[in-house]
Length: 121
Image (tube, rainbow, N blue to C red; front, side, top):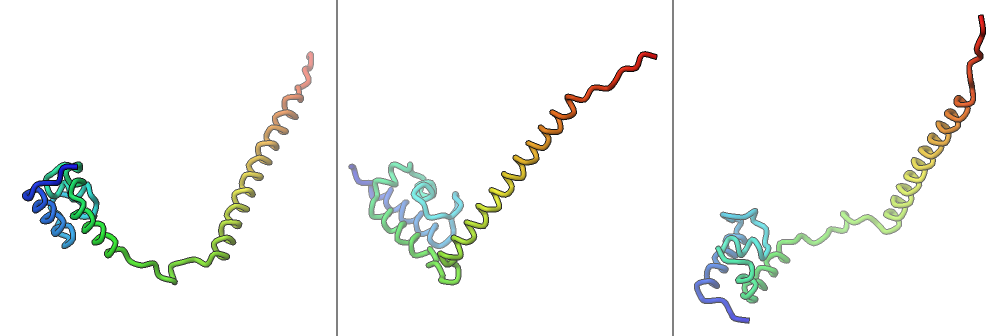
């Protein structure tokens, strides 16, 4: 793989600095390879040929991520209870729908057999 030229690497580093500082001019500011390439004015393939800059970008992106807090996590048993309750509720709705459908079919069948008496007056 052919390495990128010095001016291209400088453009990628400048774009990375803008993205890291939150001063993105052309993108939404997320730290992605596509945004880095767009900010630098190069193709994504060219950006992918600069593995050192991409590694720095990934390190910055990883550092930006907030570690999950213990209070945000739902205990496993609680998650299972919620899932089971949701499943039971969905089954209940399905049974009610099927019973309603069967009841309507039964009504149609009984009314289809009723014929009015004709009177010859």
